[in-house]
Length: 618
Image 1 (cartoon, rainbow, N blue to C red):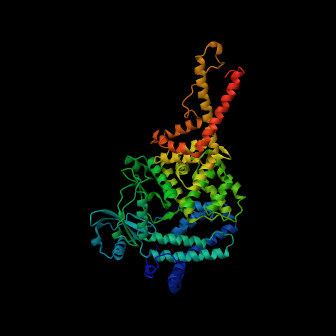
Image 2: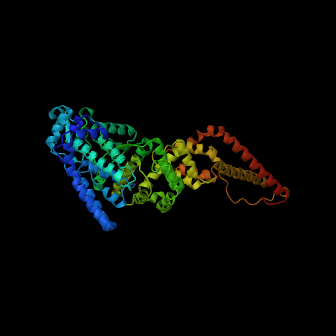
Image 3: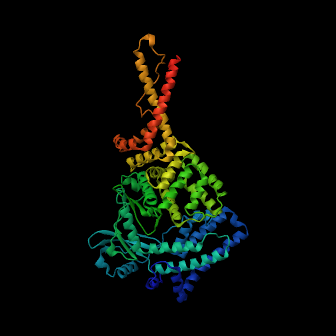
């Protein structure tokens, strides 16, 4: 990185990414632009020539040569500086733009750079906080404990003796990032206008990247993110978030509580804390799913350095510069897509991708449906718990590159987040499957969430055409029961809602048939008991009873299955059923079911009387 840049960008008043203002700034300052162009365009031009030659000579068709060029590009991006590193990381989540081999290499792109001079860091702290170092800290280490592309962290002690971590931005960073984004955006604009086979809007991608990097460079924004994340997870005693010290935080300086913890990838260190690493991973997966599907506000960069195991058993999240949001409709849409995937309904799955913004409404879905089938059918046959997320996303990358997909920014960050989390988990457990770990959460959301879209998805999951699939309900309940924070009463309410919904008619019919059989069996048992006391001359021809008849309700197979599962859930009590009896009695469908049962029992009784009159054995 060049350290001769000044922060004239911030001095110009540019605090948020705005490509038009940036263009005007550099039109007035061409010398800065030409200097950086010389540093960046020559190595980029030489790389493009070498790749072009390989393509012309057919060398690029060889996987070894393609991988070599991909690694070469990754190294070049690191040499060119933070903006190029961030651009490479953004591209590493875009299988709709780049081929698989380059995708794999860019995913290895690290955000680590050497630290800068500690004295400069102290000067920047004094400049931004408008105080001398000794007015803020009792002590502060000049040597950083870690450094990344945007800044570095120093350990300090405040005047109130609280130990803190102080993140300091690299001097001149905003200038270099802005200038590089301007150059990259102009390159993207040229490619968009002159290279026909690039279908994705690269300029929009760069603008999205610029917006996010500017947010990441604003430590006041990161402080707000940290506080919002902390408040959203206050209810979760297993999650820790460092406290932010606002009075010693500015755009380029962030002061937060010092956290003593161990990286999740340090298995021995975690075990030495007396903590099971698998438990930490489970907490991380559950928290990630809660972020994605409940709060819609998620940590988009959960790499090993940002996740620490604490000695009290909590999982601590650090670094809230890169956060993202998912709308309520997108969250419901993602769960619906999982339902269609599990049901192997690839036609509806392709429609989900349109609703989620991956495909335009004008795209012909007909050739995409068999492509989805090729990618998913074998994985689904294995079962969700055994599905390999990485291999599925790799296969999907090929489909997205082949067909006109455009990934919404939130989705790219979700994939990056989950792949990073899975990578950490695999270092703990080589057999870990993130989809298997996530499915119980999906099941709970599907069973509990009152969202109308998800209510329809639940019905769709449980019905195959017009036939109710008890095995699917059992599978959903079994998986939902694995959730320690399952709300059993809410789950039971949703089952009752399903039973008494218009689409629940087939389910009600099964219960009617089951109850009819049981009532009839009780009547038969009573008849047999009375028959035993009759004189031999008028005794009925009754067959010997082979089976014990259990309780009326609990003998019905569906209820038995349901209760066997629900009794295993922590917090189960017969009271949760008794509290719902008034509602069950007053439901309009209950009266309708009662009439149908009475009618069927009467019909069976009449048939039995006819058989008795005819001298048949009953």
